[in-house]
Image (cartoon, rainbow over all chains, first blue to last red; front, side):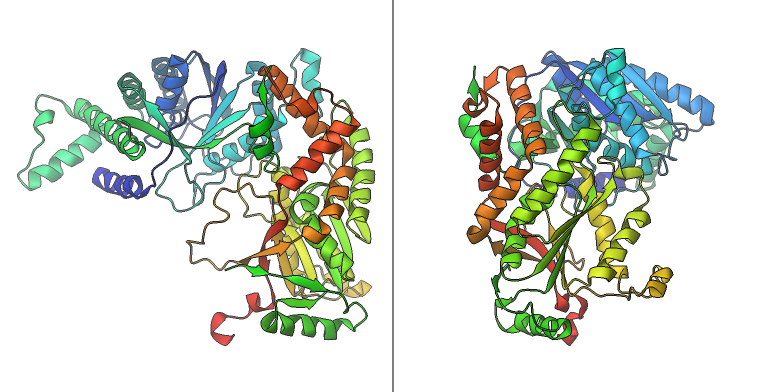
Length: 305
Length: 299
């Protein structure tokens, strides 16, 4: 199974075009709006970028929309608690300040009222006032997970509607002023067909990649599973092969090591495509992309005061 | 491969069936064909059809088409310093005025609350559109392109998806049975234009999917650009919202745009004009004509 994932990722990774390197925008706060505990640090993005935002002085917040009760084998209630604890630990490794849980029921977000979910995101955007929002690409095709689809779609409106005073004017009553995030970084798997086409690569340094690796394998309830290492070892043993690096490691440690290799490998592949050592790819939405008729004019005429 | 189209004056007085036949035949023989007798434009809000298709709509109206616009939402959110109720009232008057500037015969408002379509019944919107399609019997429909990605206004997506389905099922007698009792017969609209502002970065790339897709079509709107400018200028409330939000963003980040040093009626109008001119003198569509329904092997 692991080999299959690696092969599929490999095809996707090498099939992508070279991307320009992007600089991070000036700002103070970055907020990741995601459905699940582990979506802030996947092999297809977020962890390295979050670490870089933190390194460049941003405060980072993580919003987990679902309760993650299905991820793990400890029953719904325990899964929820374990996954939240692991998310708190993983985000701490990346330097994030807080995990905010909306606690919608995991994998049952299909029929969730989108306006209600969006209202929660707008409330949080007005409180934490992010300059940058990170999330799943709402225009990704073939996305089968209803939580990913709906949280992404709610986010696609919340990030800018939070700036409109006629949207949820009741928030003003508790002192929350309208606030629009100006930049979006969107991620999605690259091996699921059209829909997500990255337009930017973000360079990472070695420390950022290491933190991303560590954060990723902190989600022991779903990743770095000893069974995956056992499977790989058994498959190799059938052909009288072994991995020297596994010597002296138990299955749990070997699984962690495999996850680290994978994250290192994908970060290097993305980096090579952009002419640097390590990188992650995103679809970046700039502050004036929603005004296609004005973009060229603004580029030419906006200046510092 | 893009098709460039010019519209000629002349068919408005012909019987509808004859005109449709002529339209269909002309599509295969010459890039210029007679103006369609009746054009129905479905729009999510007051500005999307003006900015993405205004020049083409004006061109058809000039050539003799009777054009009707159905605006699905009430635009109540898009203003600066105005409550939703007043915004909606002004937006309606301004949408009417913009439509008139393009030569539209009537603008109809369905009145759904703007930015709240996500939880509105899809079939509810669709069924109201079916009613109008069967009533007006258009030969051409314009709808927001629900496949045009990266538009942050999702009302356009929801409207486009409902309109696309309305276009399809308005022709089928098993949809909305009571319509038969009030004389509204099923109607098949021969031509469909999907419109959108150029926000999708992949929109101009060749299709790489085997999915059955309408083809690209571009329309030169140089001759009707003044009408499009006038229509955009009529959307004063939305234009002010855009200008003031842009200025607020620039102020907050220590930048300036000279034209917005003073935000007043004149600078707001000027910015709206720059926006329309920046979109160029060509409007691009996805187009599904008569041949769209005929399998390739039978063409």
